[in-house]
Amino acid sequence: MFIILAFTIYHKLTNQATLQQTKNLLQQAFSQQNKPYIIALVILMCTNWAIESLKWQILVRTVQKVSYFTAIKGVLSGLSFSLFAPNGIGDYFGRIVYMKEGNRLRSIALTFVGSISQILVTFVAGLAGLIYLQNTAWRSMPQSQGFTGFWVTAMEYMIAMTIFVVTFIYYRLSWLTTLVEKIPFVYKYKFLIENLEGFHWKELTKILALSALRFVVFIVQYLLMLHIFNVQMFWFDAVCTTCVLFLVLAVLPSIPVADLGIRGETGIQLFGILSKNTGGIVFTAAGIWLLNIIVPAVAGSLFVLSIKIFRNR
Image (tube, rainbow, N blue to C red; front, side, top):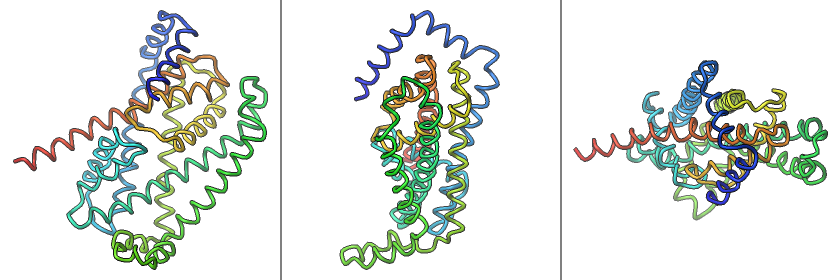
C-alpha cells in the first residue's frame, strides 16, 4: 500500500512540475523569511507532546503517581513502539514500561480513555469541517463533485451517530464498567478496568479539553506548514480541510512508519480541491509526519534504549 501510494504521489509531482521547480519550492520553504515559522513549528511539536504527557499523567494517577518527566518518557517511548504497529497499538506497550509491576495492565484501560477523548475531538471537528466545506468551498469547485451530495450527507449522519455513541460511553465509563463486570468470563479480569469507575465527569471533561487543545496545536501546525510550502487558500477553508483530513486519517488503518503515503494521497485529494500546488501539499504532509511522528519517535527510542542499557547493567 505504501509503495503504491508513494508511486502515485511521485507521478503526480512529476506531472505537475519539473524537478527544478520542486527544488525551488523547497529552497523557498527553507529560506530566511520562513525561519520564524519553522521555529514555531518546533515549539508546537514540543507543546503537542507536552499536552499528551500531561493527559497521561492525569489518567494513570488513579493507579500510580508518575512524575511529569516520566510521563514524557512514557509517551515518547510509546510513540517509538507504535512506529511499526497498526493504529498506535504499540503506544500502550511503550507507556506501561514506566509503570510498576502490577500496575501495567491496569494502566492500559486508562490510556485507552485518553485515546477515546482524542478520537472524539477529531470526529467532532471533522464533522464540522465536512459540513462547512460541503455547503461552501466544495460547492463551487468542479473538482469536488465526488465530495458532495448523497454519500457525504450519509457519511455525516454516520459520523454524528458515532459521536453520540462515543460521547455516551465516554461519560458513562463507571456504568459501562459495572455492566461489563457482570459478564461471567470477564469478572475475573475486572481488576483491569475497575479503576475506570473512579472517573468523575469533571476529570473526563478536563481530559477532553486537553485533547481539544492538542487538536488546535495540530491545526496551527498544518496552517504554518501550508504557508511555508506556499499552498494558498482561504485560511478557514484550510482549517476545515485539515479537520476533515485528520478525521480520514483517524478512520483509515495504518502503520505510522508507512503513514506518509496515506497522508500524502489524502492531502492531495482534499487540499487539491482548493489548491493546484500538489508539491506543496505533499511536502506539507511529509513535514507534519516528520515533525509529529518520526522526530519524537527517535527521541522516544533513546529512552527505550536507556531502559535496556540500565537493565543489562
